[in-house]
Structures are given as structure tokens and as C-alpha cells.
Length: 390
Image (cartoon, rainbow, N blue to C red):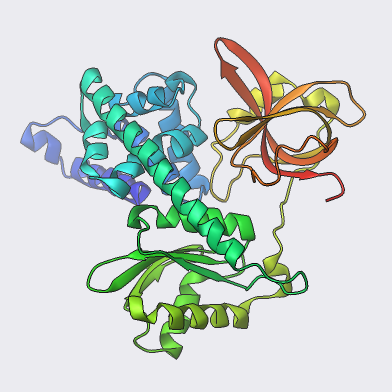
């Protein structure tokens, strides 16, 4: 990945320096620090595990961005997402910049994103950022439509109360967009906590699938086992533990679906199908503080395999309302406290929320800071929400 390339460039520069190559060619040694903002972006966007080496790279890249030394394309994308480049954290790269860059490759031409990152003029970068933002909005519309199709399909697969969901799920519709099936599979996987593969039409009577898995089920190994037991059923596949891609003949979809569910069933254990959230416990009332939130925000960089601290607790639900299309804005009070705190839960189940009958909720959340129209407030970013007793 980008980190490997960066270290390779450093090693090459070191070797050329030892050979006095730059001096012999009359060239100035390249300052590789100029690429650290790109290294940070690529590392976070590719969801690379943040081990010590990668945290060092991401931290250095973020420091460069906050110091106002990022390339104009990254600044333009941050500003397009209403993020302050001078206070950028890893999640801004992952949730604001990366989706806009990826939208180009999913729906149009990846070169738009490349040009945005390579250009030197602010006005040009702003123009590219606007194009990428529009593509990302289009991507979200397509994704929402596909997700509704998937939910309809799920409702069509309703089982009796005594009959559990299957251990894995495959979904396919001819009109789905290839560029969005990975996101769709991820969304459905999060909803049902099962391995999911979403398919869309390819070429030459082939369909392409994007798979997402859960802890305990190595999705690439599952595909390898299916290919071994059923030679010729899968045209090609590749991936890793949590995500994979594959192609197969459209006519073989039903056979593959059965074989895949059967294979996952051979390896799944009882606890694998239950979603488990690990938290850092409950906060004391005094910890609901902007200073604590600020220390956590900049205490990272947080990311894959090095997650931001997650807390849990019971709260009295004071207010609830939808914002946007499917986000739930809450005002809550910790049980046994009178402190009012804002909270936001993204992409809630609209069949469940808002619910005016709920008085107490259980939350798993991150402590965050919300900056809006010049005001700075403490905010809980909710990762899990349930009515007390449910």
C-alpha cells in the first residue's frame, strides 16, 4: 500500500545518498515529507490496520495538514465537507475525504480524484472537489435505492419467530450498480450481522459480487472452500478475511448461493452470529466535558485495529427528532444526573426510530465535539442505540 511505497522511497533516497548520486547529477535531494498528507490519506482511506508504523505515518501526515502544508486538493475536499483543515483528524480523512475520492472510481472516472490530489491551483482543486462532491451525492442516492431494494428482499425472506436467519446471505438484482455493491453488502452485514454478498450484472452473462464478513468468518477462505468443493462454480475471486470480490455465471447464482450458505454453516459457531460491542465502560458525570472530548479527539490517530475509545451507559431520553433523511438527533441525560447532552445516531432504523414511547435508552457512543455556526458543544456520536429493556 501507500505506506510500503513511502518506505521504499525513503530507502531508495538513502541508497542514492550513499552513492552520492544526487550530488553527481547536480540534483537536490527530494523532501519526502511533502507526501505525508497523501500517505495519511491513503492509509486511512484503505482501512489499513494502524499498527505502530502506520500510526507514525498518519500522525505525521495529519500534523502536516493541520500546519497548513497539505496539498490544495486535500484542503478543497475537507472544506467541501465542511471540515476545518487546521483541526483535521483521521476520521475526517476516512469519512469526509475518502468517500468523495472513491465516488469517482465507483461511478465515473477515478482520474478526477487523481487530478484533484495532484493539482497546484486552489481554484482548480475547488472545481475538482465540487465534481467529486456531486458524484458522492449521486453515489449516496444510488446506494439508498439499492439499500431499499435489499431491505425489501430481506422482508421477503422473513422467517418464523422460531426459525433463525440463515448464517449468510446473498443478494442480486440486475439493475444494481457495480460501484456500490460493496457499500450495500457492508450496510446489510451491519444490520443482520451475517456474511453478505451483493451481486450486480457484469459482462458476458457474468455477475460480479462484493462480499463483507463478520469476525470469526474468513470470507476469502469461504470462497476458496466453495471453489474447491464446486469446481467451475466461481469464475474468479480474491480478498481477505473481512472483504472479497468474485465473479460467476449469472445462471449459477442460485447454486452458488446455496453452496455459500452451506459452507459458512460448516464453520460458524454459535457466538459468531451475535453482534458484540466492546466498550471502555461508563463515564463519570465529570467526564462529559469539552476538554476530555478534545483530548480524545486528538489522542489518536484512531482507526482500524486501534479504535477510538467507546463508552456505554443508560440515559434518560429528553428529546428526539430526525435530521437529514435517517439520522436521529437526541438530547439525553445520564441516569442519576441532570446534565443535558446532545447526541447523534447516524443511519437509524426508521421502522424503529423516532419512538416517543421510549424514556430510557442504552447507548454505546464516542465522546465528540460538534462545531456549528461558531458554537462548540459536547456531542455523543452513537454507535449503538436501544430502548432500555430491549
